[in-house]
Amino acid sequence: MNLIISKINKKHNPIIVLIALLIACATPASNQYEYLKKNAPFRSEILKREGGHFVELSDGFTYYKQENMNSEKGVIILVHGFSIPSYIWENTYEALMEKGFHVVVLDLYGRGFSDNPDTDYTDSLMANQVLELINHLNITQAHLVGLSNGGRIISQAAVLQPQLIQSLIYVSSNSFEDIEATKDVSVSTDEIVEFISRYPAIALGQLDDFFDPTQFPNWPDKYTALQQYKGFAQALISTRKNHTSMDVIHQKINDLNLPVYTIWGVADQVVVYDEFKDKLQKLLPNRQEFFIEQSAHLPQMENEIAFEKLLITEILVQDKIPVIVE
Image (cartoon, rainbow, N blue to C red; front, top):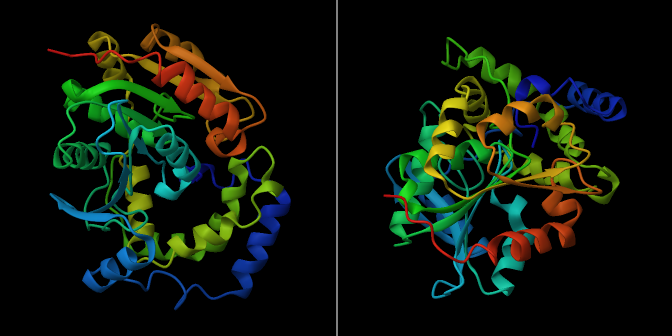
């Protein structure tokens, strides 16, 4: 996932970096990356192969899946992180489906099967995408679960339409980090070319998200498939450039008295909890906080049983009463 591009070379396993550099030197970036366009034939093929749905929203087509639409247990919207799309929630999605919840998962713009619009990839862009999908599905209230960079999206969504939010659940969220805003948020052709040249290293770098990467040997291959889609690099670069501090937004969330939960993998080296824990306590003092053992940045995959028990039993089941914000 490696939500912040500037961290790509900062915390990687040196062996992984060495292998990635060797592959990058041996493999030309042209022809194998960013050659697939997400057009009508593409969407038709995806529906045949993967199932799910497409809906055209304000800024492009959005791919999503949902189950148990008539459930009375509540609605859970799973929002993925910086670059890996909705398949990162696969285990959680299936667990919630089996427990009878109305569960929805989507690909944010620039990721997965959703469109890659030529625009600024701001938190507001993707938060509005989530909110438009909620309205399209005639959902009146939902629990929003944001993984990593998805935490920024659910925070923004909560202040835009708080009446739709039943609770906010942050998993390994980077939304509490200190961010220095970028003055020039445009994305040049040279930046895109340079970024694509590092695609092999970036794909292998996804293993750094895990406490024990040997348990997920095919993870880089799944990421390489994403790098086929035209506009992927631009989306990632633009997203990073449009990051700003979310402190004011989190203060507003605290004032709204929305139920807030934070979940962390104890070994996370991508989002380092100790670097912002004091600020987090000041911003959201009323949150409930949980830590997952034997996991790093992706606890929903690494310690699936503990994560699902926590999410379903400790959070969703106890939070049965909708919170209505006037």
